[in-house]
Length: 92
Image 1: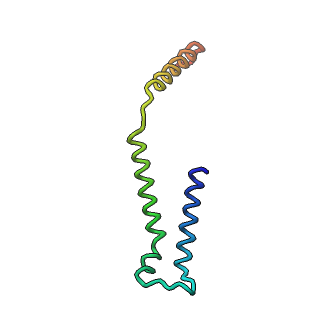
Image 2 (image 1 turned 180 degrees about the vertical axis):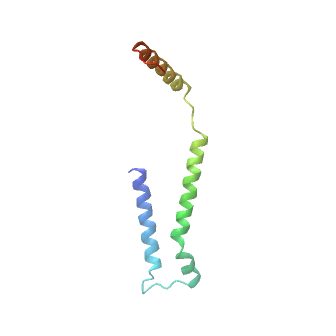
Image 3 (image 1 turned 90 degrees about the horizontal axis):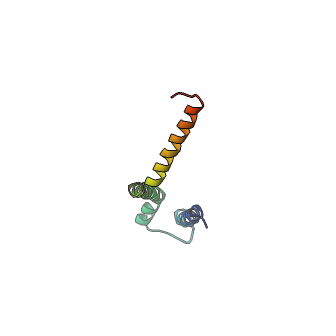
Protein backbone atom coordinates (compact mmCIF):
# COMPACT_ATOMS: atom_id res chain seq x y z
CA UNK A 1 0.00 0.00 0.00
CA UNK A 2 1.36 3.42 -0.90
CA UNK A 3 1.80 6.20 1.62
CA UNK A 4 -1.15 8.03 0.06
CA UNK A 5 -3.31 4.94 0.53
CA UNK A 6 -2.26 4.72 4.17
CA UNK A 7 -3.11 8.38 4.77
CA UNK A 8 -6.46 8.04 3.01
CA UNK A 9 -7.38 4.90 4.99
CA UNK A 10 -6.48 6.63 8.25
CA UNK A 11 -8.41 9.72 7.23
CA UNK A 12 -11.47 7.65 6.30
CA UNK A 13 -11.30 5.78 9.60
CA UNK A 14 -11.00 8.95 11.67
CA UNK A 15 -13.61 10.75 9.58
CA UNK A 16 -16.16 7.98 9.95
CA UNK A 17 -15.56 7.76 13.70
CA UNK A 18 -15.90 11.53 14.01
CA UNK A 19 -19.09 11.58 11.93
CA UNK A 20 -20.58 8.76 13.97
CA UNK A 21 -19.96 10.65 17.20
CA UNK A 22 -20.74 14.15 15.90
CA UNK A 23 -24.08 13.16 14.36
CA UNK A 24 -25.11 11.79 17.77
CA UNK A 25 -27.12 8.67 16.99
CA UNK A 26 -30.27 8.28 19.10
CA UNK A 27 -28.79 5.71 21.49
CA UNK A 28 -25.66 7.75 22.22
CA UNK A 29 -25.72 10.95 24.25
CA UNK A 30 -22.38 12.63 24.77
CA UNK A 31 -21.88 15.09 27.63
CA UNK A 32 -21.67 18.74 26.55
CA UNK A 33 -17.90 19.18 27.17
CA UNK A 34 -17.11 16.13 25.01
CA UNK A 35 -19.40 17.38 22.28
CA UNK A 36 -17.83 20.84 22.35
CA UNK A 37 -14.37 19.30 22.00
CA UNK A 38 -15.50 16.89 19.30
CA UNK A 39 -17.01 19.36 16.84
CA UNK A 40 -13.82 21.37 16.02
CA UNK A 41 -11.66 18.22 16.01
CA UNK A 42 -11.20 18.13 12.18
CA UNK A 43 -9.79 21.67 12.27
CA UNK A 44 -7.36 20.69 15.05
CA UNK A 45 -6.28 17.63 13.08
CA UNK A 46 -5.77 19.72 9.93
CA UNK A 47 -3.55 22.17 11.85
CA UNK A 48 -1.61 19.26 13.37
CA UNK A 49 -1.13 17.74 9.92
CA UNK A 50 0.15 21.08 8.61
CA UNK A 51 2.64 21.31 11.48
CA UNK A 52 3.79 17.75 10.85
CA UNK A 53 4.22 18.48 7.14
CA UNK A 54 6.24 21.63 7.79
CA UNK A 55 8.44 19.84 10.31
CA UNK A 56 9.04 16.95 7.89
CA UNK A 57 9.95 19.27 5.01
CA UNK A 58 12.21 21.32 7.29
CA UNK A 59 13.99 18.24 8.59
CA UNK A 60 14.48 16.78 5.13
CA UNK A 61 15.78 20.13 3.88
CA UNK A 62 18.20 20.43 6.79
CA UNK A 63 19.58 16.92 6.25
CA UNK A 64 19.74 17.11 2.44
CA UNK A 65 22.94 15.53 1.12
CA UNK A 66 25.19 17.35 -1.33
CA UNK A 67 26.34 15.34 -4.34
CA UNK A 68 29.83 16.67 -5.00
CA UNK A 69 30.62 14.03 -7.62
CA UNK A 70 27.41 14.64 -9.54
CA UNK A 71 27.99 18.40 -9.49
CA UNK A 72 31.52 17.97 -10.85
CA UNK A 73 30.27 15.59 -13.56
CA UNK A 74 27.55 18.05 -14.56
CA UNK A 75 30.10 20.89 -14.78
CA UNK A 76 32.27 18.70 -17.02
CA UNK A 77 29.30 17.98 -19.30
CA UNK A 78 28.58 21.72 -19.51
CA UNK A 79 32.21 22.46 -20.43
CA UNK A 80 32.15 19.75 -23.11
CA UNK A 81 28.89 21.07 -24.55
CA UNK A 82 30.24 24.63 -24.68
CA UNK A 83 33.42 23.47 -26.39
CA UNK A 84 31.38 21.54 -28.94
CA UNK A 85 29.17 24.56 -29.62
CA UNK A 86 32.26 26.78 -30.02
CA UNK A 87 33.64 24.35 -32.59
CA UNK A 88 30.38 24.67 -34.49
CA UNK A 89 30.72 28.48 -34.51
CA UNK A 90 28.37 29.56 -31.72
CA UNK A 91 29.63 32.39 -29.52
CA UNK A 92 28.59 32.96 -25.90
